[in-house]
Image (cartoon, rainbow over all chains, first blue to last red; front, side):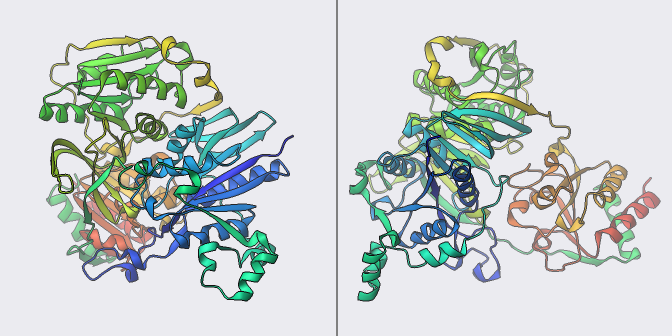
Length: 290
Length: 339
């Protein structure tokens, strides 16, 4: 069957899952700058689904698309290491301050300039936690969506059969192409890096990253064009500026309050019989337990 | 016009708990704004389900019935909800943050080009002053939610676009029936005129759903176990204590993922939110995603061999020890001392 073109949407995010002592300021609030920048976990699950589709349909191509500042090029490199064939960094100052509507507009406009059969995204990112960009990109591309994907059961020339998770069970659906999928963390983890790919792509760079490079480095890029990571900005994708950034974002943050974990005055007791019994008696007396 | 519309989910026999919670909340917001509450029901045989919505405070129920709409599907529901919202011009639209709501609400928001805030933990009415344009906004919906992995709480507003859309998880709002159900009105919508063949390009081939066997949301006492409990068998000890105290058993995501306990007992950001009188945590380290689902418990007891477990910082009592030793003692001394 005809090979498929798959675009994976990925995001570089601060690692909000493990906010250890080093990332906490003295007042108990998070020091965001101290958090490590990582590949959004569910986007890795999405990448795995894309690579599985490539296994099922040989000759297919997996391209990573990420929207972010210059350092998000790291995400593209990681994609290559795991088996992706291509990558694009969507980057422009004018994207800054975008909420999900403006972000999905930028991404959909970029995808509109590419060939694709399937778009795969992680269900949600661990910084915004909204789970909105995937479905909003699908709506703007006017293509169907299948969310909470756990497994691709079958692919043929005209459709894909997919298992998706529901709140209390699962569903098997069949969808034509093109289609957008969002992948949940209950789907298989991403396969590890391929050593050969790491060797091949570790010098992959965007044009911006090359600006400070030495002449030898620059020559290497002329000899090995696959090392160039494409960058696209507002003008390359033909987006309307009013629909981007703050002006294109209907939602605004009015207030942010840091969650301060004040250590409560906890009563610490041991596992000794006497202390346990005293606790039980106290709880019965104050009617906490019957 | 200008009302609050709640998208309601149904399994065919009754309206979903989360939807009734949202109608209740919408009722309270509508009272402040002096507007009406409307509900949307979509399905293939909605019988008299609108009565449940009237009982919780909806004045109008929009019904869209069609034999093709037996189960939720993205495209037809998006078309129908958008058509209704275009016609009725609500100021606020609410959806449950379920797999359905999180599939549907963003698509509706995109189509209506309006703002959506997901997983709100609180909804309030308030004002806003925008310095840049010297504009004062009254009666905005404050959409309050955690972000950044739960490390911050943000208040989001949608000053300029309508409707202001929000999704809210089950158990966050309280469901309450009116003393006297409203004598509401039903508006039937002609599905044929709204959806087309293109809305059904995705087919449902198979579907297996189990009605939740357990609902721990309302339990007054919860015994919860984490990854530290170690096995499904070890959870039996927690069930024994729960039995004796008249409590329910819950688990962290780590325990659920490891197969020690069922998913419908999961407590935390991706499980249920609970507010019991007493929460006994056994072998739970207390990652922020779990704390988010139980930190409003009136009393928290943490049993952990690690004296520095994060959950200890929000506990009222910390028992430093192994739950397999402590729990049998709790059972023994409870039996000895209870009347």
